[in-house]
Each structure stands twice: as C-alpha cells, then as structure tokens.
Length: 141
Image (cartoon, rainbow, N blue to C red; front, side, top):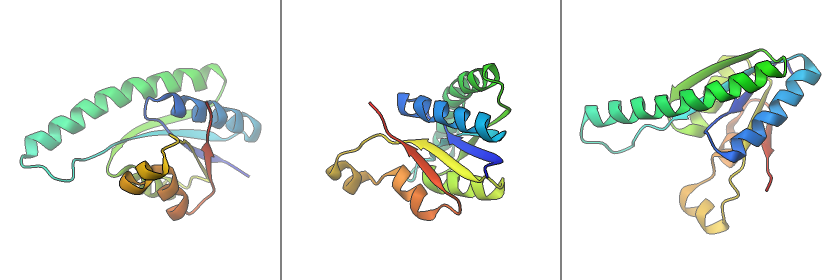
C-alpha cells in the first residue's frame, strides 16, 4: 500500500510526533521514508544576500533536525532519505512528494486557532487540498 512515505520535519514537537507515526507505518509496510524540511524563502526581499543568508541559516537548522530524524528511523530499522528544499512549505512538500512518487505524506498539525488559520493559512490544510496522495495529519498534545 505504502512504498514511499514523506514526513515533514520542521524541528517542532508536532513534527517529532509525525515522525514517530511515519516510522511506525514504514515498519508495517516495509516503506522507505523521505524526511523533508522546507526552507521558506522570504517573499519580499531587497537583497539577494538576504535570501541566501536566510536559506543558509534555515538549511543549518533543518539539517540538525533531519539528522535527529535519521538517527531515530535508523534505530528503528527504517530506511530514510533526508532533504532540505526551498519554497513555500505546502507547495514544496506537494511537489516533492509527487516528483519522488510518495504514496503518503505525514505531517504534524500546529493546532492554530481559527483566527490564526484565517490570517496565516495552514500548511497542513493546504497540503491536504493540493496533494496527489493521502495526507495524514498527526494531531496531539
């Protein structure tokens, strides 16, 4: 059923819960995990150096989070690939999943309030809306 599972990693507790679920599913289905972090590119920037600096900082941060994810998955006997990609989180995740032939996207939910979702949007909602495959949104305390 699931041969390739994308799990979104942003360094948060929500993402750690999603990783735990994704590893469990990968074990059950013998799937490979693709752990992906998205470095959000500033939409309005005056300088190329500002964009490059933001991407460098994000890549360093996400590489640490992805190394933790990799360690956990490997300890559980799950094959895992990691990537940091630039872009808008929902769009980048959907495009990556489609390009890599992922059968499932697993991600955490931040539990934004109605007002926050209205003002900022929800990455998980946008991913569910646009993904070509099932999306499992892991909620929790």
